[in-house]
Image 1 (cartoon, rainbow, N blue to C red):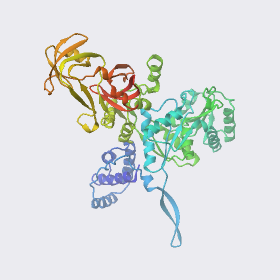
Image 2 (image 1 turned 90 degrees about the horizontal axis):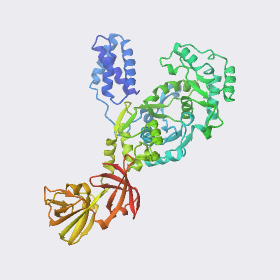
Image 3 (image 1 turned 45 degrees about the vertical axis):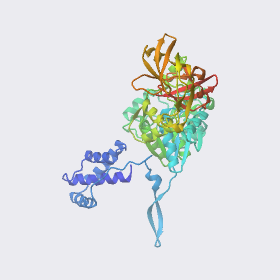
Image 4 (image 1 turned 90 degrees about the vertical axis):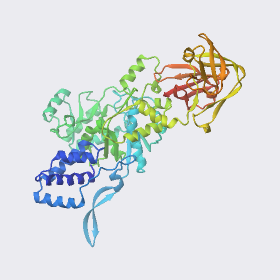
Length: 589
């Protein structure tokens, strides 16, 4: 909610009321705000519109008319907010936050509202139960970019306090740091929630002593029935001393799993049932996770998240709209402990067609598909898989920056990301010939020439590959399907070389006669290789299958990680290279 939005809402509510017998229509104001602030959350705009119309509808007609005349002089030609390049600016980060202070003016103390600069501290807080994937990228990239924009701090925090349900993967820190580095970001700090259980317990004891939390021993169904009716459970109003004693029993494992939970007191009549006295801690009897094997009381996500954001000085949180409800819960804890609530931007969910992001489906693949290659498998949407397939990091970064902080969900096709990647790699991808199943072509009476194959079509400055073709008899390889399409007596062109006529063919060889060097229109054009100048290749395709074939020896001189393009096949990245053969990963068409 910005001051500009509130001002525009009031201004248009006044106009609407002045033109409609002193009554402003909320729907009309919402419509105007939606036109002016198209990228902003409609729920928030509706709330602003309601506040403005309620305010105007309490005014007298004379007041409305007087204010309308003032606004009329200023002009009512409101223009939609110009779309900023890059991330939207943060008004509070640029102007500062209002702070009421007493200052001395002409010998008297006067209360003034001053603006105080607030550092921008963001965090990316994944659960380390799997590698970084495309779905993580929006939160990670936007958080890092906002910290960079305002010269702030970007933190990486692993939220690993639910190991029974979400077992952390090995080497999570190393994996995430590597993937973030590839994207172009280095966190200013790294922390693990599992290292902070003692502070969690301290804050739990603090809210218990304040009478803002309680230990509940109701069974789950019993509590649910009471909660749904807005009735307090019998343990809610016990003396804080008793509550602390009950909590100690939880810590000492006198209570077992499901027998007791710690709850934060909220509004028992809150319209969202999940907000009513939400749980803050539970007991877990058996923990296999080595970092937490001596713990039995585990904080909820909302409790852990709130404490860590406060302790680490986080001032800006960027996360998915599915966490909107969590912000409502967390504000109760912040309020009880007197903490300043951070600024939060909720963005829409990102889905991608054509890759696997679902952990359930990935687990099925791991169990049932012997060809599964781990987290770099090309069928997955992990950052590692994108890197292995030859995507450049800027393609992912630019995609997320273009999506920005819009609250609406987005569905991105893999083809769209491939097109974006192509813009980065096309010019630097050397062209090569690929032949999967070669058929020998023998050209008789050939003229001696030098065939010149451009590394990038239409750009001689990118270099050429030269092949000396001998006089008399010259042997080539062409693809099997091209050989099958060759017609006896017809002329075809060996690309970058010369025209030949097919005089004899069988399943293994084609005999041709040299015709001419000059290019002729209307005849088939065929790619070729020289058998003595080939390099065997093995290509990992997007479905994890392997293709084998042959390319040019020049391919062996390319560095690992270099992008290449096989003509009429697609873009690839070199994974391994040796004189005996080259292994490549297919990127996209």
